[in-house]
Image (cartoon, rainbow, N blue to C red; front, side, top):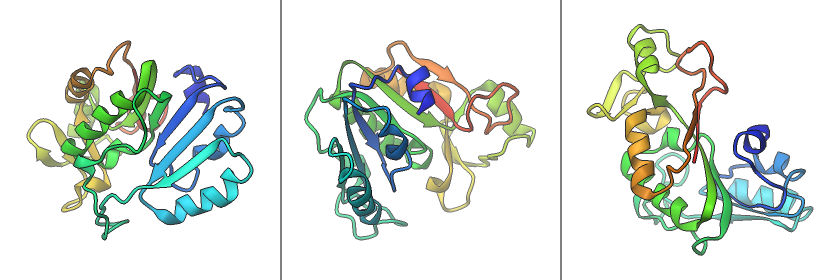
Length: 216
């Protein structure tokens, strides 16, 4: 939440979207911040959504949670919607601030491309996108090659674009070339005023958080 405020400029009056809201990991601390704003979160796990509706929404009626029936071979095997075809259940230009923390670190390229398009659609003009990644720049790649990184990313999913750590399970931990991430942000029109705060996962000396934070 401090990063949202200090790095992303989140205001107490903002309308916020949490992509992958889970069991309220980010919603709970945001209750104190969004005193005049609105929070919306969606997730594929109905158990987390039900818990949040019962324990957060009853106390804070400006916090809204919704289950989305996206297929996931680990968490929602019967899901009817493919992530690369998913349309966010919100109107265009609704949100001041959209965030995805530890979401794109578990998604494949075609899925990410769709999510970025949807983020652009639901963001208000001048709104902020705050997302965390395993973003592989030259320093991260050097540490990976020298086996100093916490994520080894030794398997290649798409040549020179994305890499994963766990054999046969790309979504468990997946990283992307930073140049590819920036290209996707440009394609969807949400790269304006892009700021990158590299994390500690690659064992770099001056990492901020664990994952890399990209704000645009």
